[in-house]
Amino acid sequence: MKITILTIFPEMFEGFINTSIIKKAVLQKFVDIEVVDFRPYTKDKHNRVDDTPYGGGPGLVLKYEPIVDALKAVKTEDSYTIMMTPAAPLYKQKQAHILSKKEHIIIICGHYEGYDERILTHVDACVSIGDYILTGGELGAMVVSDSIIRLIPGVITSDSIESESFENGLLEHAQYTKPQTIDGLSVPDVLVSGHHENINQYRHENSLIKTYINRPDLLENYNLIEKDVQILNAYNSHKRED
Ligand SMILES: C[S@@+](CC[C@H](N)C(=O)[O-])C[C@H]1O[C@@H](n2cnc3c(N)ncnc32)[C@H](O)[C@@H]1O
Image (cartoon, rainbow, N blue to C red; front, side, top):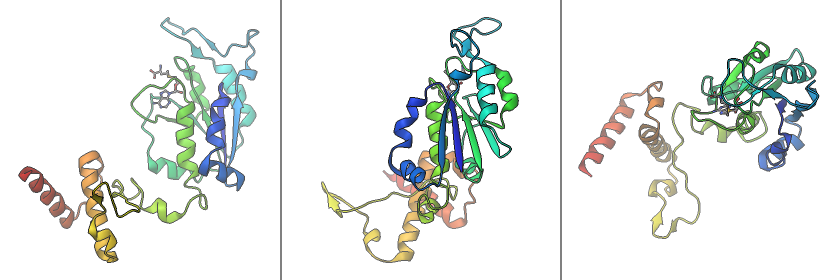
């Protein structure tokens, strides 16, 4: 897989590409990351890539020409182009899985007040990483790239992906590591019991309650079985007693 990022701040990606799992994925050729500065594509004699918005208003808007020319230079028939923008559906793990199967993903990073809307005629999808405004699309491009790269088979073990938050509709259960007791805090007994069925049951309950507390919206699309309803009812009556 190849990921091409169009940005006017290519230096922002140095740490991302040269650290940890992403660095390893690049070195092992699971992914090729190409960062392209679209400023050299401008035809403006002052090297500007932005201009004032038609209709007036604050700030500057990225121009059509440099972005679309850069896009045309890197695009192939296998490319899938994404525009980073808060004015889009929220990015989810399901989409990361779909994107991880693409041959070539191009991510355009907006900046300033945004970009000329006509650029979207060259784009396959708009992606928002959350209900907040960032200075530019660069951090979002890293978020999206990271989430895709770790799903490429071989980059990390498939076992760790399967048990992660969102994979089965719930948040992941709590995790612990050595030592068994620290500062008077102990690991739940069941996790050191060696009884796999009980461990799985405990983890499912923990996962369910964590989701109920932190992301009840996820439960709207989760198929709760009778046992799950009992777990949540028991949690609620226990909470009321507290
Ligand atoms: C300051 S923002 C522009 C926001 C725009 N004026 C609006 O209100 O929708 C500049 C750029 O940062 C990126 N950006 C900001 N927040 C984002 C988010 N939540 N998700 C994805 N990209 C974002 C986009 O590329 C955007 O064009």
